[in-house]
Length: 153
Image 1 (cartoon, rainbow, N blue to C red):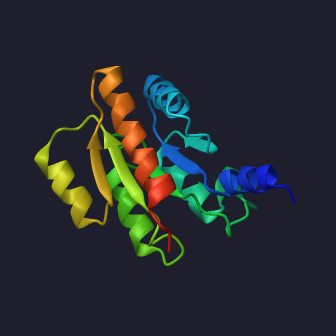
Image 2: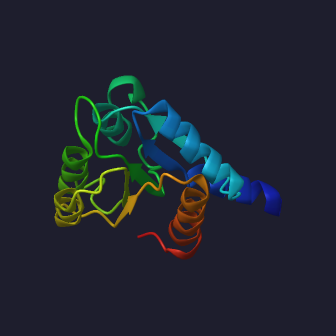
Image 3: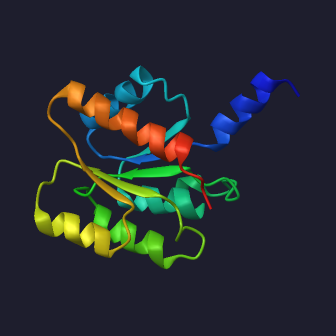
């Protein structure tokens, strides 16, 4: 196997799960990742129920290879069906997903959301800046740390 193919396979396995219901925020996040040369595959789900279905291989993700988990979960808080805090709590309660790195990526500036996120086991809490350049910088730092520097369990 050539070196290039190994990296491609590594990038495929080191994917990101983006849990975001706002299509504009999805586009913005994907654009910021691409602009920062973060080439990892991004799986996008629109609500908390879909996020848990993906992580547990149920619903429309039935049969998914559960040996390949996301390298990083980017989780919005304000979503329909099941909000981000409930999703985070269920991720931490499940043995299969307990140690997944979860970064809250939200517009919420409420202290109680931030505090509750950390109480439930969030690895990081990032408030989405309104300014795209600030958001680009935040995504660059996020990608560098969680996808390059951090050593997964």
